[in-house]
Length: 213
Image 1: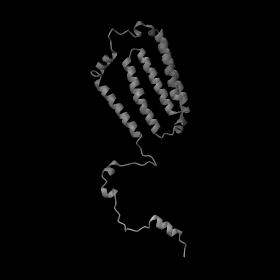
Image 2: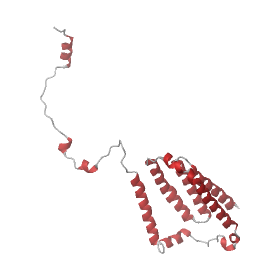
Image 3: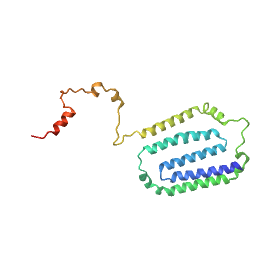
Image 4: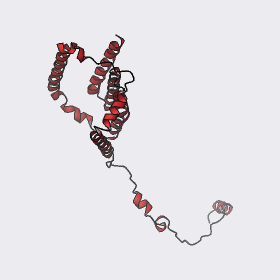
């Protein structure tokens, strides 16, 4: 009974955070709500005894992807007012799609197949470790897809960083190659000047006090 109450609490938080993500006007607030939804989803994975997936969701998405997303949002100069102009014209289609999804979920949850004994999650055996089993599968049977997914994430990170490296106006840049290739004569120039005798401070004050002829 306790697990059911915890499930409904985290499910409600997940739904509210997802709704706030798409309705928030500030993109930074939307990213924070998305982090909350990811964390709530990780807690649901914990209830399903999928500890490795829950920890991966928190570390990868909350700890890395969302931080990178916040970095890109704050660094890019995006005109969000211009992007929001065409929002309301897509609302009817979005409502239709959302209604279809809700009807499908209700049909699945209320179907008689949901009450079958085989539909419930079986209890794991004593000493079972899903992280060990998942690791054996990843590094043996699914090693190539795992490496391809890692390469795809790396390309996404490099692309996000490259988007912030565009040239901006009124910004000074340094060329390290030119700084290294500079010579001594380019930095210091010795100028010879004729020596001039300047009066001392006392003599200059006395000259100023003398009346003009």
